[in-house]
Length: 138
Image (cartoon, rainbow, N blue to C red; front, side, top):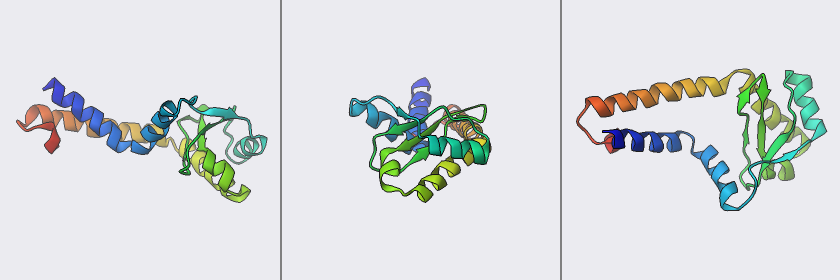
């Protein structure tokens, strides 16, 4: 039963956050540091002016797929962008992405997603223990 629960959690965690996992693990595979830090004064000041969030830097992942993330809480925000956003997007598009991601932080989407994930994970583990079926069916 423990094995089924652990395997279920690993599969569930990956499937529910596969884009984020891909971005983080791609940096390791390429032998790169996780998130080269840049201090783009324009974007950092824009976030401060429009949202009140204080970013120290923006972490940049070396990925061709455009993607942004905003882990953290409003008290300690962190922004992650991919290199394709900084290279291929014009200033207006970059502003949109940065402010969109800041909105996720301001609305506590990380906490809400974590709570929903926990409810679903606990429900899945409960079903594994209560039902005599393999975790694959869940």
